[in-house]
Image (tube, rainbow, N blue to C red):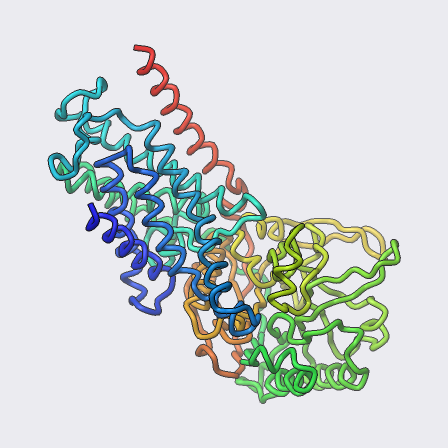
Amino acid sequence: MTMRWLILLLAGIVHAQTFSSDLFPASLLAPIQLLMLATLFGYIFAQPRYAIRYSFAFSISHFCSGIYWLFISMNTYGGLSAPLAAAAVFLLSFYLSLYPMLAGAIFRYLSKKISSTDRVTKDFNSPLSTTNTGTSPSTPKAAATVGNAILIASAWALCEWLRGTVLTGFPWLNIAYAHVDGPLSGWASLWGAYGVAWLAAFIAALLVVGVLRFSWQKWMLVALILIAGQLVKSFPWSSPIGDALPVRLVQGNIDQHEKFSPITMLPSIMRNFELANQPAKNPFNPPKVVIFPETIIPTYQNQLPPEIWQHIIDQARVQQATYFIGSAYAEDSLSGVPMITNSILVVDGTTPIEALYRGGVPHYDKRHLVPFGEYIPTGFHWFVHALGIPLGDFNLGNRLQANILINQQALAPNICYEDIFGEELLNDLFPTTLSTSMGIQPYPGATILFNVSNLGWFGNSSALGQHLQMARMRAVETARPMLRATNTGATAYINEKGDIVDKLPYLQAGVLDVDIQGMTGLTPYAQAKNAPFLIFVVFTLIVATIQRIRKRRQ
């Protein structure tokens, strides 16, 4: 019994390493993820009555080892004591583990009734080989075993969606992201990351069924899913529009202590703009857009000395470029209370310096805030105060905001972990009309996506690679190129297929000059969002529930 729990704990730890190519090469992430999840499903299939406990053992080690980097932000930069920081990571991991436990509970309730012996050592595959009456094991029909695989995949994927939605959501380490470099990622253009999660869980379950009760049909089904995914990924869901846009991505590699210290704040700000002013990689086609990381101006824009802003405007004028600058932003509101947002400011050589102080500069405001880091949940002011996080209580940006138009391209921004919420980015792909100071104005749908982040809070950890994988999935879902400008990495250019075209090394200051071809056209997922996935898994679970009720009445 003890060995069983140790295996599940170890499988969860290894599983957490498949969301970034830090430990394993990218080509092995998907197979290892499937094998580790299959380990869990094997135990659950063998003993459904322990499904909740098995799911907890697997998931608590998975999350603790997958989001350990939160300890760095709270302890190293937040000043929280090591025991409290470790406890906070464990408590969050425990909360996130409730969702796999719920999936285990659903499977336990809805799966076929099993033999009362229920022993792995005697009959490891007993839940897959029982009759409807739940007596002694017998040879089942193929549909029964595939049915078990469909059931656990639906329960698992639905709980992944719940984890990414409930209480503002935290879909980090969704099993889909282990498959960005694998054939399953192609399915994301049809039904998104949660659909890929369903397929990954289904294949993991089929591996168990196929090993315990060998059948060529099951292995052929796995092969068919993988081949179809590769074919779907090669389909041209979008097409080029306009001319390629030369863009510069800045990676400042500014230490968090330097960034927020009153003594070193201004020098650290200027280091970003010194990087941006380097000679162009192609002097005949210099960058028209320069994208800086999140909050490179770590104070409100109207608190920065005018001479600094004038220097930035003059530099943009000389470069003949538009700057996208991450900054805290303060703007007067009708209520008299300033609106404070985590924003991207659009500044060029014609920007009036007065607009930066009275709140009239074009900007994008973050729409999905980080709990504790960017807004304070009721009753947790004491915790945020203990962390000492600067710029801690922002207002929420409007759900619909205008894309930024540059040289026939419409760029849709997102900040920090907004790009891990795939469905929330889809509205940017559609044309819209917005009320402005000049009246009702039409805006085209996005042809390019870009993200600005500051992962300096998490040191040289797997958080950098994990975030990059999720950004790549967004590119596949939307069939749009994705640009990333980050403080410490990964600053990268991702094409519309989710492939990394170019990127900077982690934790090194530098710039990345790239020519970005905007794309137009909508994937099926962009048009239908998560609705097909939700309809499918809910329908599956309803059918399983009806069957369970009928059997209990017999």
